[in-house]
Length: 451
Picture 1 (cartoon, rainbow, N blue to C red):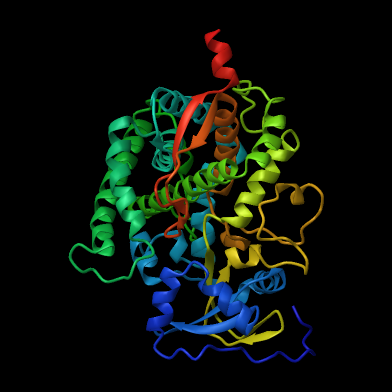
Picture 2 (cartoon, helix red, strand yellow):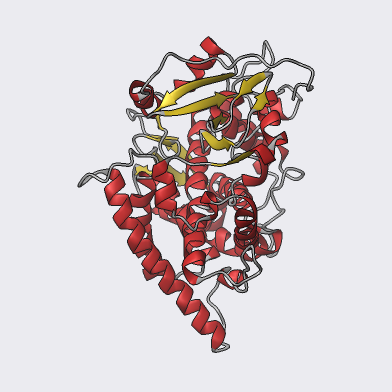
């Protein structure tokens, strides 16, 4: 952040007035911000649906934003705010936000993740068996979405099959409406998402009531982490009301699912498109056992034991982060990368643009995971956001990604089906448009098991 004596430059602005055309471009063009950064610089302002919005990229601007946390607050577009709900910690600030984050964060501690490890391994093996038995081309991305949902719904929340399947359909509908136009026209994604939200809250409330009844009766709880939410206190030190907890459960479903599903699809897609890097990774995976020893799931494939895997995951996250950006609103005037930003401005940190913006000469358009091992990059990574509002499901997502990558690539050989569209739809998170159609054959471990 510039010193107080350094004059701040005026904020560059696009000529947009109403922001209608800018908003259409924002939703349709994945490179919306990138082209404007090239024209206006690393911090610029435009209008989206009447809201003056500041876009920023680069490590300096991001560092300045985080350094002035007291001068900004969380913010989301109206569609997200409404669909998450007024009680959600995502829509709260200050003590309200911190109290609820502490409660929900208990589901993602190292101790909690150790609980989930065996269940995730079992789901990875189940997915591999399903793909191996398919006998033809299958759309992998939808199966990865279901896998990620099973992890959060079954392994974390302890839901049974009936509750899980009922939730999954509504949750997919709800997710598709998150970043839609907030107009509840009949049949629109937003209207369908609103109805799905009501059904989701009813089902989650029933699940919570069952857990509370079991606890009151002294009965053992189902597998999962719902018991970790028991006794959660609000900012005044009072127990959270049931409707408050239920909205936090809806948020953690999103935090532990959507970004993970996107990351898994992008990881396997990228590796299948880059056979040389896949072979480089396979050299390391051949030295790792699958499944991990019981109780060692959390650390079996961490960066110290699997540095190439860590580098591949980082590089995929750099090129295709699961969220394109995150928002703040300025409470007061601040300086970002030497540029003056007024109070009451929405600020969007453009993660995708920041990940491709580094020192002169860096080949940041190329997939080169080795850069994370040889010190060949100056880019700071923010795939799950940052600061005090970093994605709650980050640690769970990273564990799932490591376990699934090793489990799938050690047990299966995947090949891309020709003639499909491999470009990415970007809302709400990147995913291959044609579903990532692949054929699966038995890999080395599976062959050995049959011999």
